[in-house]
Image (cartoon, rainbow, N blue to C red):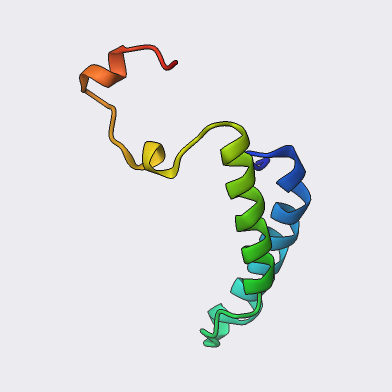
Length: 77
């Protein structure tokens, strides 16, 4: 699955690869230290935040429940 911003796709793939390696080779073997991929996560997170701003998406909009409300029935502007 691609990232929200095309410019973030490479960072996403790097982070996903790092996470999958950490999870399978460390976490499942009992090593729960989670700093292995944190540098990639931070770079990817910054890229996603920038892409969200460019697309005029606010985080609070993602957390709002619209199902079965009047907002669900209104088209987004």
